[in-house]
Length: 88
Image 1 (cartoon, rainbow, N blue to C red):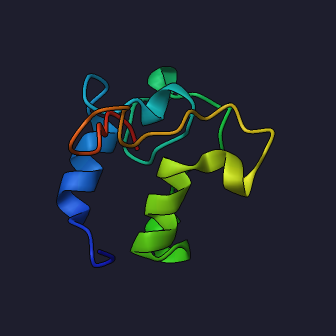
Image 2 (image 1 turned 120 degrees about the horizontal axis):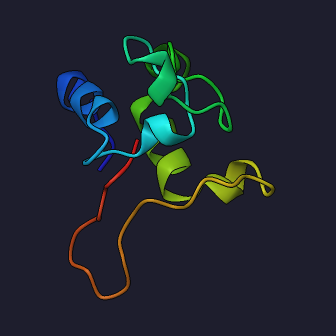
């Protein structure tokens, strides 16, 4: 079901390199520059640019939006009963 996300939880996941892997590829505001990647686009303001469902879809099926992306799909693993979010 689409709906508003939890911005604080999302920010915590993005900032936590053991829970979310976003900074491996993306620049994220407030994170040490030496620990950020430049492979993916910067994530500053992404919550203002994309609706919650659009962001969710980009995490679940990034190749649908960019067939050449290096970003893996973050979602339900085969046989899992809930999404296995470990990234942004």
